[in-house]
Length: 220
Image (tube, rainbow, N blue to C red; front, side):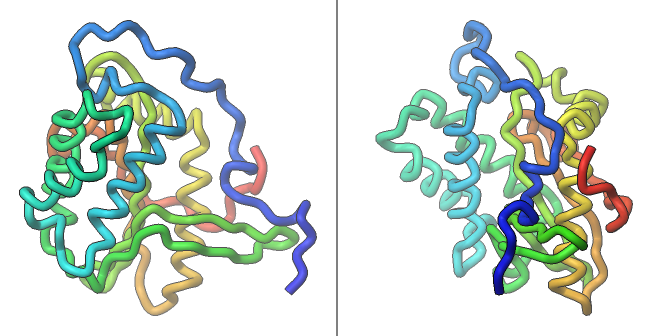
């Protein structure tokens, strides 16, 4: 299969370009998720940690002790050690979310790769996590975006604005189309966008929606 490079796209190449986060404001509250440095490095670290937790052959995410130990082992000898307690608590908050509680490992996949054609383009990418529940398939995307200095910065309105500003709705529509093509026998249930720094309850920091479908423009 030969694909002309200029016609092979990822979500990153299709989304609007937004300014980088810039320098982190001075730390006021110690080692919290809000003072955790921004940038690609911390995003990659958190994604890899979540991949370790949810790719286990047994439901590691149902055992809070194992979740904390996995986090501790992953964070040792990294530059994030000052935030060990905050990141452990974050992982506990995530695995305690209701839609993860009863999942069987066979119904969970991480880093799901896809590529499909939407003339004249080929779209490729990876979905952070996919799970099946009650005959429906859902996707989860982890976001390490820094939206502000405290929990109030992660209100539903603030997250909605971030979704629009970063073209995450376009991303979700592409991911949804990929899942519909890959799992034609399952109904698509929706998308969970989880803003990791904003998870402080069972509802805050989570944006759930069903994309509009596969008719979104490929460029904005």
